[in-house]
Image 1 (cartoon, one colour):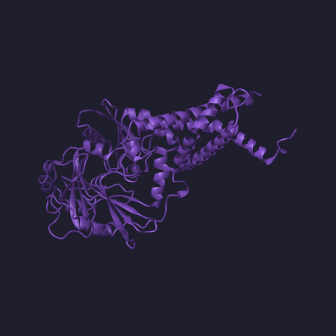
Image 2 (tube, helix red, strand yellow; image 1 turned 45 degrees about the vertical axis):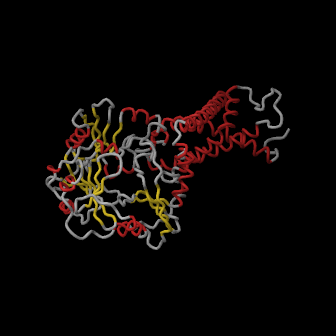
Image 3 (cartoon, rainbow, N blue to C red; image 1 turned 135 degrees about the vertical axis):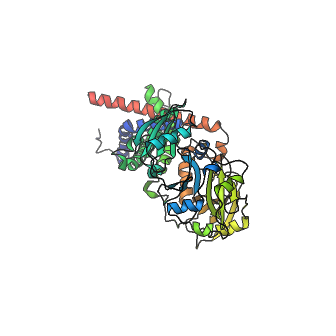
Length: 503
């Protein structure tokens, strides 16, 4: 009788395949099952976020009588020299304030629109006032203290706003508000249902128990290496399953699977049926982490100043009262920007395209398409602008998702322009032809991530997304199949481990 050491190389390899799959699966199959089940939850309840639509819906309309400070005075109070990005909204305690953008990853400076004073950081009393204004005074708000980071605020986009004031609204939805201590504005909302479902969804799916504590520095690597191990486990299982399946003739039992015990048999069959989708989803989950920066590269910064043009000569920026008077109804927010060397004011009150005004003449304005094309050519100095594609409908690379989805808060207006450049990274820049704003930037790495992550992991194919509930039924069916594969594997592994320990 041959020993394992004297067995042929092929037999030794096969034995190691079996052992690796058997023992690695004891723990990893539990992760697989968790990922499949939590993924179904995430199809309908995403990680809490404050979408632009939610934010605007809770802002009161701007009252021209309450605004005494001009944009130029607000910029001077904040020590800023130019207007692009300046915003006016009644977002702090229900009172109108100017938000003057700072540097990257810096909170904006806040200027009182009534007095012109540069406002300090927000305290608990101001946070309560902001929460009261958020609900229009309909519901009481209980202050729950300052938190630096909790289960629903792991996003790095919130770093400039930390620590956060946490408040509980006494509304039917049980809404929790997070108010920035830097600006006094609501930066995140989470209803009771969102919080509850997130513990079974995004929070556990993304291994967020490792975030916001001593394990935080290792969270990224933990997700990456668990995913790598998961891919290897699924691959070995697929090979083992194929080796054990009788393609030519059945076993003596009449079955092509050698397993008589029901759990082993179901694991074998579900493995053969759902192996490809299991490998695909675990691999694409790995790609979501941009492991080893494979999708990153040296990007030349966009020449946004050259694209926007020099400040417009002529009269000073119009007072907010003049801009409000030029609109059919008072907006909830005004934002100053620049395109084609024209100073613009974008007025918003809800979903849809903003109304575009000349920020100096306080009158509606339309951008010149030819001038916008010329400006787009200046976005990447040294790289030729190959063409501009006009998008009137979403396509594979430019599309919108439901608000609860991971990127559902990113607005994707239509129509849009796609400026295609001939640089080494094959850069695409998306522009809004109505406002001249830069909407997004993609390069070859981002497009590879689109295929290997969003397409494979979330099945973000516009043709399928447009045919719901087909998308839902397909993903739920495949997720349940993957969960069955994982749970049967976990049961088999733990039973075998129990027998070994008892022996």
